[in-house]
Image (tube, rainbow, N blue to C red; front, side, top):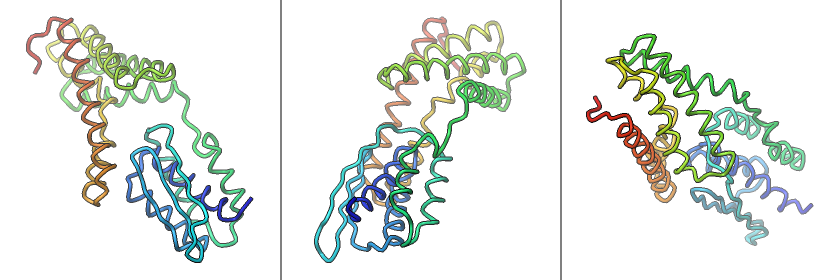
Length: 253
């Protein structure tokens, strides 16, 4: 394989993995440039979109290769970010690029996910812990745990069947709110269970990355990530509002 083509495929794969697993734009750009410098390439043009990367690699003033890589999904996986960063650290001019590219393309081996049932339980425990922090008792904790665990499972179920993610969030927030309200029925602190059970849906990383991108002058990606966070928040609000109406809650404190 042509050396320049292999190099740009390697750099594009690095950027793609960072972008789709929750890295801010500045980190994606810096990581690609660092890897290129270590491989002996200084003339590199990068354009980062919210869900794609465009790279042009030049040698002796002549553009050899231009590649557009699309990030198929947008999730948060800090373990994958750490692994990619560690791989960049060990790159040098003698690195076997084909072998490294093969490692990066093996995304499951790069960052194996915890079993889904374990992630489901931990999401329930996390939301339940917040309910205790918000002043709930152990009955509220249990209501929050079961409702958020159910919501987390439903979210994964819908996304695996390629539901529109925003429609899925409305359905999940609706279902989670209804069940948390029913599980905490008759408890004066039922509002704590309802508010805590949907915290796993909050797009915190999207908002953090949006602010980081905007302050570092990556305006396009910053605005898109911010708008995405707002739409997710709006979808959550729709689901909660419908559920509260169904439960007959007129005032939510």
